[in-house]
Every structure is written in C-alpha cells, then in structure tokens.
Length: 167
Image 1 (cartoon, rainbow, N blue to C red):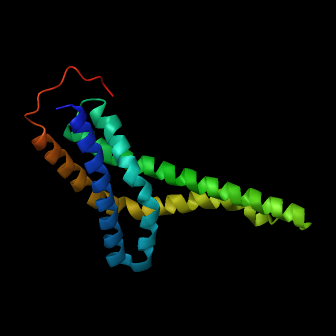
Image 2 (image 1 turned 90 degrees about the vertical axis):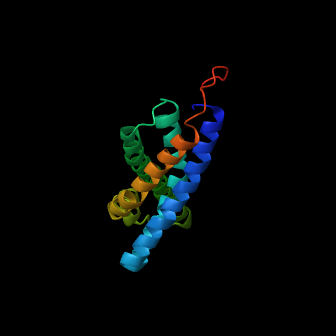
Image 3 (image 1 turned 180 degrees about the vertical axis):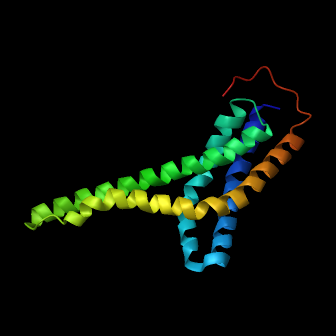
C-alpha cells in the first residue's frame, strides 16, 4: 500500500480535494455572509499545504488511522494560518520599508501609522482564521475522511513494495 503510486495518488488527489474544500468554504461563506467570503481567498495556500501535511503525517509515518486523519485536518488549518501570516507579515514589512525609503528620499517625514502594519497583518490573519475555522471544520473534515476512505479502498489489496526507497 505504501508505494510510490500511493504517494502520487495521495498528493494529487489531496491537492484537488483541497481546492474543492476551498471552493466549498467560499460558497458556504458567500451564502451565509456575502462579502465576507473574500476572506477565503487567503486560504488558497491550503491547496499546497494539505498535500504536504498528508505526506508528512500519513505517508512518512505509514499511518492512515482516523486519529491521524483528524490530526491532519487540524495541522493543515494551523499550517495554512502560519503560511498566510508569514506572507502578510512579509508584505507589511516590505511596504513599511518601502514607505520609509520613499519618505526619506522625498524629504518628508515617515508616517508613524506605517509602523503598525505588522501588527495589522497579524490581526487580520487572526480575524480571518476565526471567520474560517467553523466553515473549514464543517467542509474539510468530511472531505479528508472521504479521501482516507477512497485511498484505503483503492490501495487495500496492493502489497507493500520492498525494493523502493522510502521518501
């Protein structure tokens, strides 16, 4: 079961299911709250994060239990929040440095409000995570368990290959 084919199928289907989950979360938020659905676009990092978490938690540990799948859902949300906050902090700090550089060369004062940009970036990330946690749990959990079920059914009869190197 833990073959290279299992890995490739798990990663590819995981990315597709993460995109499906993101679309479903966007739809749920759009129906429930309208414009707030735009918060979901920041979660696109989850399309790459879910397969990476699947690889680390399931494939590398050779454990596709229900508890591991639940941990996968939780870890994917947390890792996506970390990636989004890192990107937001990077953008905030670079815009702050850019404003300081432009202000210095133009001979004007640096806007002191710009020094709060990193804090604003973290606050927006936290608010976005709070908005997305319930729709994420409602949508991503069943999708992750369906992914588990399909993968276990597809590869149930596949004997382990001993000639492959572990990834």
